[in-house]
Length: 390
Image (cartoon, rainbow, N blue to C red; front, side, top):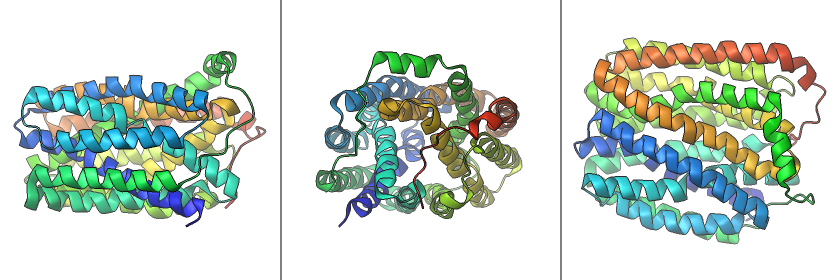
């Protein structure tokens, strides 16, 4: 099996792990009797762990100039902690083991995305042709996990998680490492990257746009259960969302235009607003699950454009770290606010007010993206973009 195909298979398995963890951890915690505020506390604290873990492992990868070896270690530790998590019952155990899984599992995401981009560039293929398989793995495993919880309980989910982790480790063992830049890693280049005004404003845009998405990821399962749905329907909702991403990622070479990333991010924020506003008024859990098809115009559009824009402004030798910063905002910093504030709003005012709140935030993200495009969009067309051919 050649390198791109190995990487496609690895994407399938890693995002399958995320499907068992991100959408179903709140469902599992709910089944253990935790309140929405307690669920928000566990996931929000996981966000703090992610803030520490993702830059740490990204810096280790850049300094050692290897992604593959770091991934092998993280996958092995994730297999053990994932198995233990879904065999835990007490509140303290759940918090401690969930924090360990956040520490080992979440840093794999930016490292995998960096691997995707570098190998796609090296092989002369599109990033989307590889990342598509991640969406497929997320969708398939979301569906399977819902039924696994329904028929086998959390113990079955623990075995499935550990087994998938070990399969990913075997694939990663067979993969070559990513091509590395010949430029040395320096703190000066990182400081230049972080001190750039355009970079900082772009990261603010990512934060504003990602908080609503993370609130939805955290509480959509709990909301479906509250409306009368079952865990299988939660799995179906994430399956619909993930499968809808596939075509968008696969055709990213066609629709993702150089110099248009900010306007594309604003476009996705507009559809995030529509999606969350409609969610606030839906009382049928089945209809709410079907509404997740709007994922095809939100996350894959947003994330693909964000990665391309990031790679146009980050120093070459800090790509893994730059990718980590992006993932850190999406899964870490924004996840903290999404979990703590979202859990408090949900418990105090219910799901409808929560979704109206995140709809308003998505609208603000759309406006901010348009403002940034007004100032930086024209100049961005002249930049040297690093985009793989289709």
